[in-house]
Amino acid sequence: MQLGRDRFMSLKMDTKRILADSFCNLLEKKSLEDISVQNIVNDCGASRTTFYNHFLDKYDLMLWIYKEDMKNIWENFSENWDETNLEVLNYFKKKRVFYLNISQYAGQNSIQEEMRERLIGNAEEYFKERLNTIVLSEEIEHAIAVYSRNVIEEIFCWLKAPCPCSSKKLLKNISVCMPFILVQCLDELKLKRKAV
Image (tube, rainbow, N blue to C red; front, top):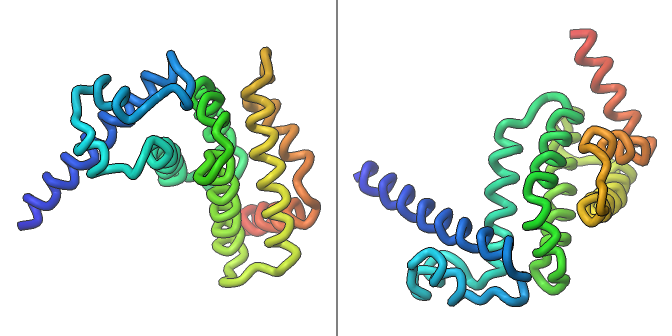
């Protein structure tokens, strides 16, 4: 029984990936606004019914691509905050055209909003786990929220730049702007790791 379910889930994921690959392929040539569900299914030979069995619309597909890619990066999360963030920045640089194109959409389900929420959630989980707490202080939560909004804005400015700096340079620039309370937490965590 489990084997059948596993094969079904694998087939479902393969179908989603095929639709995602077609969408990304089209985004290399067209703007998000100019791509329809019909274009996506025509590109990969699927039916509209197949598309709608997996996604609500092209924006849902867009967010799914981002979430899947981030899930893969964060599953291989390094204990080193900078290494993981460098990996994320390298990912955005590699997928620059995709993110520049989809960032033109600013309505409900925009990629910027999803990225902010994801970054806030990941940062909160990171600090909760490392500080061994269930609830963060109001000051830390606020610092994470403000910093996350600024980081996402910086990433998109960086992607839009005609000659963007390296991922390492951007990470350094972003790190310098980190709120002091978060810097203190990270420094304390580094000290604890060295002591162990």
